[in-house]
Image (tube, rainbow, N blue to C red; front, top):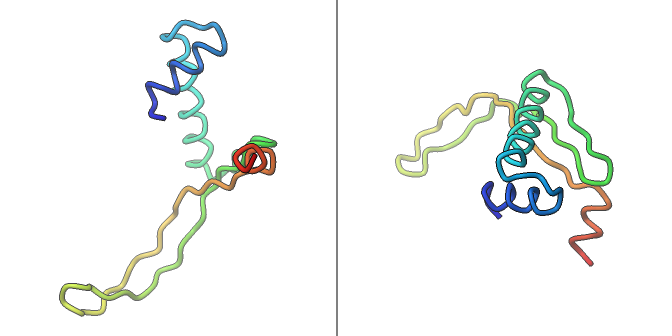
Length: 91
């Protein structure tokens, strides 16, 4: 499912117009992004949790040249599915 299909599904399930559903979906995405950027967790009970995990700097190797390289530390958004979502997916 892509974003257009998600908007159409939200519009159908809520009775909103596609334009209003798109605004709602965009607002949700923006709110999650703003919270993660601020270093906060976004918990949706039963659905899952979005949070930022920090990856430490590490050594790597360029597969083409075999040269050792330093991979810098980074922050990555992660999602952990909640129990209700896992149960729904697993039937």
